[in-house]
Length: 475
Ligand code: 5GP
Ligand code: SF4
Ligand code: MG
Image 1 (tube, rainbow, N blue to C red):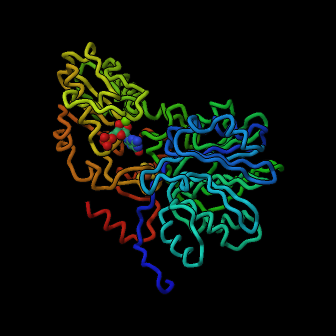
Image 2 (cartoon, rainbow, N blue to C red):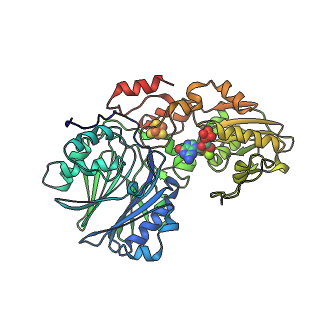
């Protein structure tokens, strides 16, 4: 450590970023298509968005806080000329929601300009950052993705590809990464393949995206997934695949299937998300069936699982809760006399359906437990005679360190409460979760997934395992 330098407290709790990335190479309308691609990936992050294009000579970048469609006007897209582009949607609760953390990150260094867009979370970013700062690196943002940029700039190696590989050999964690150079688009997936990343083709151009729903929007054809540890280089010569990083074990995020990805996407080898969610609901009905009159989804995330549950159990399905999709910020504060105003803005029970019925309400997951508690109360006020909560994933007992924004272990209700205690808290007549074995029975090759938030087995080991153990046992 340099003299006079403030001691850094080593932390493993770097920002947990949920993000979407999109890239295109070889199309005259690259920025417009990147805009559409990001629009299709908006569910993966709403805090900020950015697009960087290349015209073959230089990079152009535009970034904004907020939604893609609110910010990327025609005028703005005109300022992004070129035939190649990468874009990024960002969602992050940790750190400041400042423009400087919106990606792509663009830098100039000895080999030219480089822009990167990163989906995932690095678990040794803080340690690397301290080392890099000691060597004189100046960081523009608090994003862990910037570590990759500095490591690339600092590493030796004749080609940019060698430098990127050397940088990625030093980082640990989850990354689906897009890198734009003046004449090239590079896509890399971490050796564990935690986050999805697919490559497709559109109008003779190549496209890369976090999820295939972005391909559908622009009419692109899915080719294949980028493999864990693979680097795909796209330039005027075509597509080149490099086995860049040694991949011995896959740890694809099972939560992408449960909640995060869009149901119309096919991920992790072309498996349809909606199908998996329905199968989770079917399995849940087999494991935790109960006599009832009606199955309803908790909108919108519980929808496919509720359909599966209904199909398997033979209990009719209906929409007992209606969601208002136009909830933004509310500027008026109602008087106390309007109870549960916040929830009612978003959801309303359909009394005609619920009155006097025994209801099974299906949701995808319980995090803090507050949503389910409100749902149970709302269904009872809507006339339900009994409310049975069914959850299409196992008990969430651990935070995610690989890029999904979950709260701390202490805030996860199942980390410190038995299922019966949670049932009492939410005042449901019964509560059941899907088993881990049940979850594993639904996906092909179940060994290729990460289930850490459900079983505390973290497949990518931590740089300081003691800190992790402290976190684990402080709940
Ligand atoms: P809770 O109220 O228990 O904290 O949250 C449960 C609800 O949050 C569920 O309806 C689930 O769909 C949703 N949920 C689960 N994981 C996430 C996430 O990572 N981000 C967001 N925004 N919602 C989530
Ligand atoms: Fe996904 Fe959970 Fe693993 Fe995070 S801990 S990568 S959310 S399965
Ligand atoms: Mg939900």
